[in-house]
Length: 226
Image (tube, rainbow, N blue to C red; front, side, top):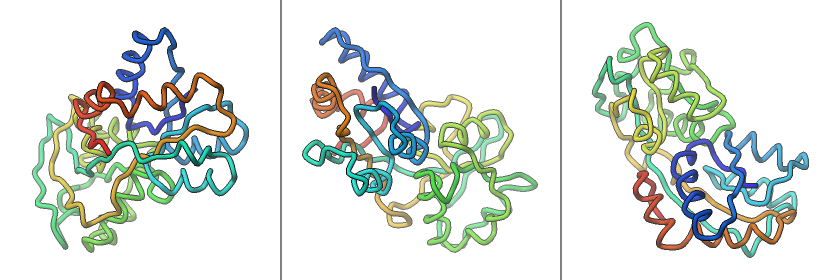
């Protein structure tokens, strides 16, 4: 049982299928916001592996004594982008003080929940660094996870959203309006680890995720491989 950040869905589904075809063992995958998954694991949910979209939620479980430290490693990286509906395209020059509120018009900015969910936290940090958070903090459409924020834009319920580059690639209903400079937010890092409750079948899959075959799948979906 793998608990993984929502942004990993397409890539990890493909990796799990590749692993199943080799090993005959099909991992069960459960996706949600890293924050929600960490709380479920803390409450005793039967997970074997956790893959978070930031270091903080892995650290949270580590401090609770729930992580096999020897198995923990940084698996992937990502970029942060602004997206608009493909049928209502926009181009943003993302720089200090850019006119984000004007670009939103009467709409709201779709984000994963900015105080707990990694994608939302990265987005808030970037908008604060660029000096535009105060323009939009009362105009946020906060979603339970990054894929839910992406869906708001794809359905044209929000004119703009901030998601990962890999999410934008996975959703044909959106276009990338701009890419955030990497120095505007903490590095986007996905740590992976086996949990102390893990069964014997977990470690081979965790090890597979760092093989050339798995790395090729992640890169195809737009992730940076550590």
